[in-house]
Image (cartoon, rainbow, N blue to C red):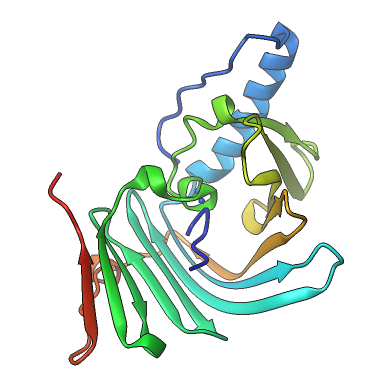
Length: 221
């Protein structure tokens, strides 16, 4: 299941820049970079897009290319449907997560915990308040550039990521690159992006088709 770090990306932001080992000027610059990133994300209330996902090997070869349809509705609606090559649907209403795999004729139902979501999903949903504590955030462009690039370097030594790059073109989300420490790279290219169009809440609910296996891993809060 390749859910974005959306499956992570808005709400009010509390900046928590650690001062230990960081000069005041650097902390101020990092806060400014985070403010710029957050300002771009704040404009997203709903998002619909076609996504091309690439899994790239360390030698540059493409291991897998997937076509995905995604929808997002703040604060908690998230829909990520892989169309090819291996159909799969991941959808949550903020309380329950459904993972439907038609090839296996099964759906796994879990209680949704937003803290378990990956980075892109956190970003798009507006959960950026812990970014400064977990990543060194730098801009690779100026505020006036049409192409805005933000580089996030994990502070934790045990992070699976070496670097994350979030890119906007003309203020619209364009690409997210996730460089893994094992040399692989995951790329999300966002196409046909429609922002802030009304999305029905029913889109973020799932009714299992008749005859499939239902596996429930839910628990009471």
